[in-house]
Image (cartoon, rainbow, N blue to C red; front, side, top):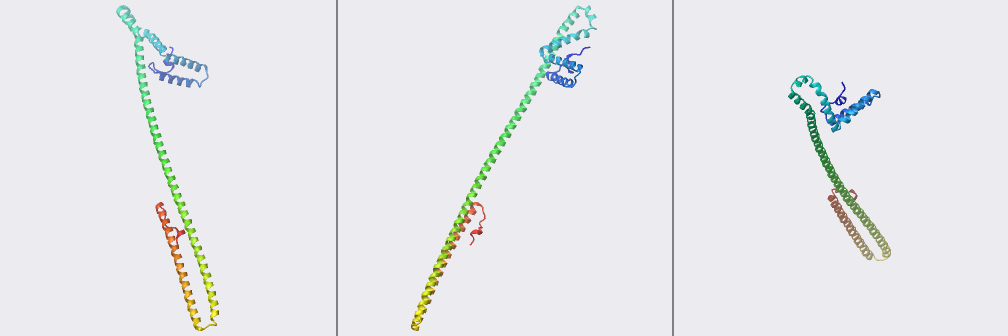
Length: 280
């Protein structure tokens, strides 16, 4: 007995288009590995069956033909009683005529069910895809927000670093200015000390000359001159000490003011207040 198209594809008569495609792909994959004539012939017959069953019109016609071909064998036992009764013959004839229509209606119903199921699965896939797209959009939005937050944090850190660098540069400039002023004060003290030494040497020389002149004068004048000399030296030393104290006080006040400014700048920037470079 020859195989039907459904048997050639190893599927049932109620198979869907997807099942038909899958069955043909399996057969094609199986016979493509063989190069003999029987495999080629089986593959050609399977391809012809696939082309007929995937065409709706040709499949319906084939199902009608297949159903009509099965009727004589199924009704062989009923033929003799029907021949005796004309009503039974008419009923049998109507049944034979209606059987392909019933088969087609059953097949159409199955097709509608399969299409409805396929539409439902497609809708579910669309919903799943839409959910996945929404999740991707939410993830992209969160990533964008995180990137913006990171960028803002980076900009704030850069701004803080720039402010710290500016304050550090200002502190360095203040330190250099203080050191320069201290050097100027030290130079002024050196010049003052040299001037005082020169004045003292000139005074000593003057006193020595006066002493030589007074050696020939009276002792009273010598004593008076000595007292005047002592008083002059004492006054000079007193003035020198006062000037020295004033210079020291000026240096100390300037140094204290620089230290306060340094501590104020470091306290505002969160840096330690100790600076050994400016300690007295």
